[in-house]
Amino acid sequence: MNHLPLPDSAARQAIDSEAIFLEWLRVVKEAKKFAGGMYFKREGSYEYLVKTSPDNRQSRLGPRDEKTEETLRAFTEGKQKMEARQRSLRASLRESERLNKALRVGRVPNPVVDVLNELELAGLGAHFTVVGTHALYAYEAAASMRIEAGALATQDVDLLWDARKRVQFVSTMAKLDSSLLKLLQRADPTFQRMEGQIESAVNDKGFMVDFLRRMATEGDPHPFRFTEDEGDLWPVQAQRAEAFLNAPRYERVVFSVTGRMALMRTVSPAVFVAFKRWMAELDNRPPGKRRRDKLQADIVQQLLDEKALQP
Image 1 (cartoon, rainbow, N blue to C red):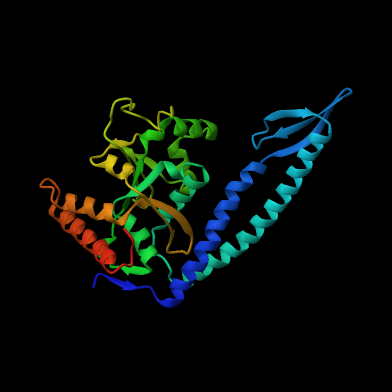
Image 2 (image 1 turned 90 degrees about the vertical axis):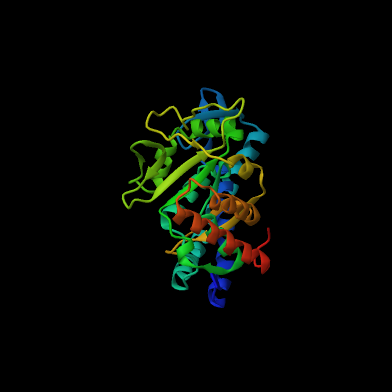
């Protein structure tokens, strides 16, 4: 048997924690509408409503009248309610994380959870898909199972960038005024671009984040660096990546060894099985990796056969 059921106590805790985490994530995103401040400013006899952004930029919303007074009131009340809800959810989230750790709900490597959360909170989560071994963590979370450790052991996570959304991605990065590598460094300051591997970042524990893209098609920029920052990362072309982008998305909350959570976007289990079977047949792939590919495909297929997972 290559997988075992999660203990009932851990399975129940996972369900409760997932609900809290998803609501916290929703509220954090909603709260961005209330970032900065709003107030009336007077210049001589003229008074107008000003909206300030977190970086202190200002925009005028119109002269003082009933409409702008209502705008200010709604903003102030909304901001207060959102901050109160965030405080309450943050306390519930911390308690959930403590119980997740105590009950050993998850075992996703901490760097994976940290990176996924940083991308999500930056508004970039939907641009990346987890492919490869780490997708197994989403499947075992969905199935309330524990997959054997040997099938999961790896020191790198592959993130597939969606080149079809390049314009939106570039716009978001411009607003963030950051490189992708700097975003990774918010998750872990020790991440650096690997020497000789411009698609990879590695931390001081040797854990790598590899960025992939589909094979360049007409209209795709190639090569492509995520930002104008000369030290930033370049996604590398990957075979069959187009099939991942066109496949149904599979989203699950996953749990780290310390109890923290993240939303993982990956491919459907059936697509994963097909990909791993293909990898296991490649003559130029090392035998050890081919055996692990086959093992991973067999495990996920068994979960599908048992209806612990939906395709």
